[in-house]
Image (cartoon, rainbow, N blue to C red; front, top):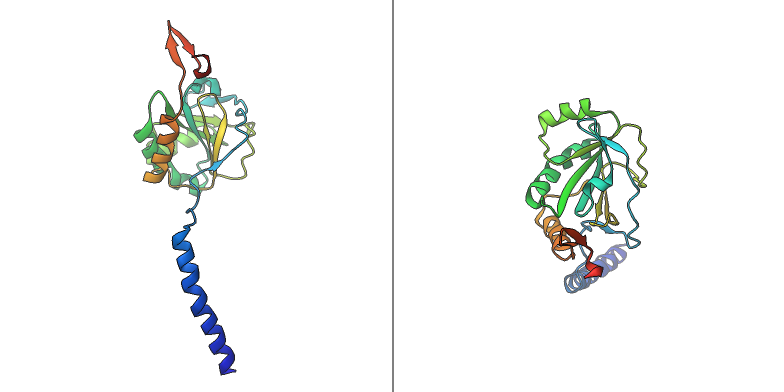
Amino acid sequence: MMKKYFIIFLVIFLITPIHQAQSEKYPLPTKMLMDPMPAADMAPEINVIDMNGEKRTLQDLKGKFVLVNFWATWCNPCKVEMPLLENLHQTLKSDKFTVLGLHVGPGPENIEEFKKLMPISFPIYVDMELEVNWGVPGLPTTFLLNPEGRLIYRAVGKREFASDDMINFLRNKIEGYKFAQKYEGKLVPPMMR
């Protein structure tokens, strides 16, 4: 019996350094920041309201990268993620990027109460009828849309949106994109230049 334990211990002892050496030579990536969406389909249109009760669609944000975060005030991981999204928004907001909170469920009253505890400066749209169908498996779920309105990345579950890795990841996407330029007052898409 003792010989059996010795052999098991010896095998584990010999395999562990080999596994560690291999993992140092070929490190596995840590958890993906966001999952790529290779099809890059156009985002399904939304018809929702903003915090003032005004009707809104994605056309309001076309021409910039939009990080769309599906969330709810009753969702604890969503609440934890909100200050991270706010930090990201403050860091990267520009005419080329914004964060958009898409609240799923009850209207602006609940959100106003939440904003008293957690100030948020990025736009929040409300889907009170739960009509937006983007295949969201749970909350929070976040999508990155490119300036054409295509779904290019998705993150299911809470992420560290204020981390340097995430900020650099998004900054690289923004800086690497060829935005439409104005020519005589009209936008000229990159492929037309």
